[in-house]
Image (cartoon, rainbow, N blue to C red; front, side):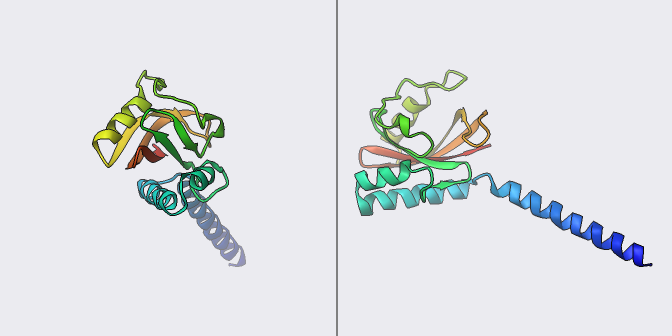
Length: 155
């Protein structure tokens, strides 16, 4: 009888551990809701603090605009990177002609969408900073003055 209780407790503990691991694994990937909320938070931060301070905070990998595999990017409408939460070396570079693995000119498409829409989702393929693999990505973007502020999720 004692052994049955030990086995039952062990199985219950393993089940809880498995459930925790499954929930934890889901939390390591940002959701569409996370992307929308983070972009809105970024836009508000830029408005409240000005571009210089805000772009520095957005580019800070350990800053408040990074969650799991989600980070913000800000592009001028000519394709120049103003802030990049995953790669500070991109800041100041014009990436208008950058294409994904399928040949999609996603930066050009993004700035064109921003010229005609205040908010939008955009799909393309990009390297996930946590897995280092090229994965399908959906980017939520909001136009702010002459820039577009975006945050994406990997599918």
